[in-house]
View (cartoon, rainbow, N blue to C red):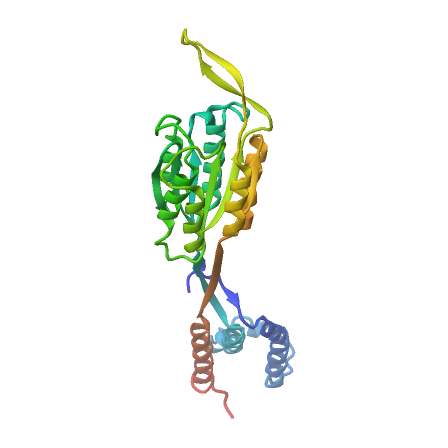
Length: 336
């Protein structure tokens, strides 16, 4: 085992390391046993013995207890079961399919939201997309007619690009709430996921379109699609940019008309909720609230696999013990 591997080593049974406290006892016992076998001889002077050579057997005899201590240490570490682990995760996401259905009629240029209703709606929609990382989301735009700007997709980068390209005047003017809802339902009706959601945002009253809003509501109910409705606009009057005969732009105060009874009916009968956004902050809070209400179920299962590394240590311990036994009864065998 290399040094890099030991940095990631864990021990399954670290309590075995307490056995290492026996090593000083083993050293003491070895020294005591060695003295027991030493003989004694009384001489008048050691001067004549200083020049005598020391046998190699005497020099290397401490090798035997050293091998025994190494074997014991390796065995203790092996019993502690050194191991490395590898963790992997399995992510099971039960996503939600969502369609943003946004009104782009001319009235969305009113500036009671900054810089106007249209840009505020686009900004909060993109922030909402960023918060739904595991959901498929699509975009439908409507005014006097409706159009699928982006089918439901997991490619949120493309979706946000499509949201950024939305502008008033892309479709015939008017407010076809029924068409906007019906087209969003059409994007979701074939989806296989359990939870399907539409966020319908408008600032007006249905005044055109081939599909009546109540008919679109019945279709949404038939496909079990939940609809959250958002009415955008301040209470009373709102500043609206008007082009004058000389080509200049002037702000005129216009009445804010939102069919709240219809929006509430659509939301309540599909299991959703109706919200009213009177400024930028309230619009952001609405999307945050919807984000909390429609949480995606994500299950993360962790798998931890262990690789054992005790075998080399056990082999070292066995090799040291065998070597000690061989040396003790061959080269370092004591005479009777």
